[in-house]
Every structure is written in structure tokens, then in C-alpha cells.
Length: 346
Image 1 (tube, rainbow, N blue to C red):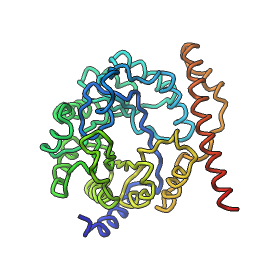
Image 2 (image 1 turned 180 degrees about the vertical axis):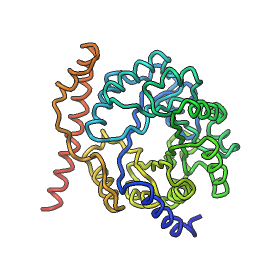
Image 3 (image 1 turned 30 degrees about the vertical axis):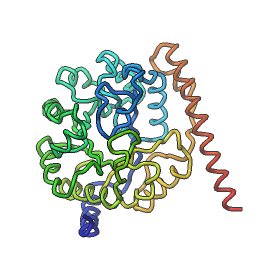
Image 4 (image 1 turned 90 degrees about the horizontal axis):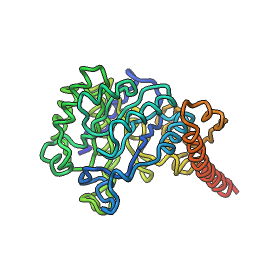
């Protein structure tokens, strides 16, 4: 699969430099639930949640979600998208959350909550810059196996509506589900047909209990091959490379293949730790300036910043509590990392 990879990557690097600044960043996907009303995608952790808890009962609190957006803004993280299980929130609830998020960020975000009909796109349009289709794989036979209850057609209709409305379009693609080199034309044609602006290229995370629990982890070369091909075919497309915490060492390689940004890192849980530092070092190794930080503790008057938000007092109180919990954990991780470095130097 990788015989032509070195030449592909060299070509992709040249094209990237012609179209983008030499920088990168961490993109945070903010989740609002850990359950999904579909719940049968063959690779997804949401498909193995206990049946005792309804998907609609797996929502995070509003305060927790908004506190995370405040942290992301202060740390300089881009928002990859706001997402969660399909069918978990009612439209009124989602619209309220989007409005609150907009009050914090003062900018529109990407939204990924399944295929949306035009009336909902119009309803959410004041708060979103684009929609993300969790397409995962474009091979039709493979897609039926991987996402039996999540067909592509509704996403295709959503992309068409979004383009008519002037909304940006993004999609997801998971390397390791079974796609082969021969499937590349299918992906390229799909991107052309729906004028996709951004693609998230993930590497499969084999999850216990799913159909893919014993599947091999795709190599960095396999993931880079798809990224390089996409960069060459679409010089201006935004490509995000998804890496897990055990794959940070491949970031340099994936950025050199033509990726713009990095995701799939437990940034609050592992903030300031060895993997966080490795991600920043890998970006530097690739010749990229890293916007934002995964290692430097944010300095802010959080109480003052929360007080300025146009939310009910009780919600602001809850946001302060959630922020404090996040900050305590992040500070603990950073101190552990500092102690580890000092011991190493002795």
C-alpha cells in the first residue's frame, strides 16, 4: 500500500505550503452525550452502552458543556465540532445550547448531530458555520456493514441543502474499517459532488465489545496515504488528522502528509502530561507553529468571566463549579508532568 508514499508526501507537502501557513492546532470535539438512539455503528463506543440507561439520559449537564467551551476558548483550541448521539436532544434543547455556546465563543461552530433536514438547518443557522456528516466510509457495501442504521443518502441531502444555504460542509472518514486503495475514487467523487470543505481523517480505535475490537490499528503510513491523496486532489480542503493518546508519535508524519490540524486527544484529562507535550513537540518537528496550548495552564479571572455571561445565576453558579473541577484536574496533571521531568533531570 505504501510503495508510492514518500513521493506522495513530498508532493502533498509542497501543495500544503502553497495554500496554508506553516501552523497547526488542536481541535476539540465537544460531546454532549455518551449514548445514541441509533447505537449500532459497528466501531462506535456508543453502540456498547448498557441498555439500562436510555440514550436520552446520557446527556452531559449544560454547565459542563459550557465550561468546556470556555476552557477551549481560553486555551486557544479550535472547535472541531459540537457532537453527540443522534436523537439525544430535542430541537429546542439544541437551539438553546447553540445560543449559549455562541454567547461564550462569539463565533459560529461546526455541528455534527446526524443528518438534519432543511428546517432544522435554518433554525440552527444563526449559530453554526457548517455541518459535519459522520459518513465514516463511502464504500456502499462496507457502509451498510459499518453503519446499518445510518445510511448515506440523508447526509447527501443535508450536504445539498447546506450548500444552497451557504453553510460549510465537512465529513468524517475512518481509516481501518476496510476501505482499500481501490476505493479512493469513490471518496474523491463524493467530495467533489458535495463540494466538501473539510474532512476528518481518523484512524480506527478498536473498541472492546464492538465488531472491530480485534481489528488491527491502522499504521501511520496507511493514515498518511489517505491524507496525502486528499491533499493532492484538493489543495485547499481542510484536513484534520485524528490521533489517539497512544499514537502521538505519528503526528509529525501526518502533518507532513498534508493535514492541517490534530484531534482525538483527551485534552482536559491528559492536559500538561507527557502525551500533551509530545503533541506540541511533534508539531514543531513537522515545522509547524502550534497555535494554542496543551501544556500551559491558563491564567484567567474565571469568576469575572462567568459573571459577564448573560445566563441565569444558577447556571453561572454551576458553570463555576464545573470549571473548578476541570482546572483542579488539569493542574494536577501538569504538576505530575513537571515532577516527572525534574526527576528525570536529576
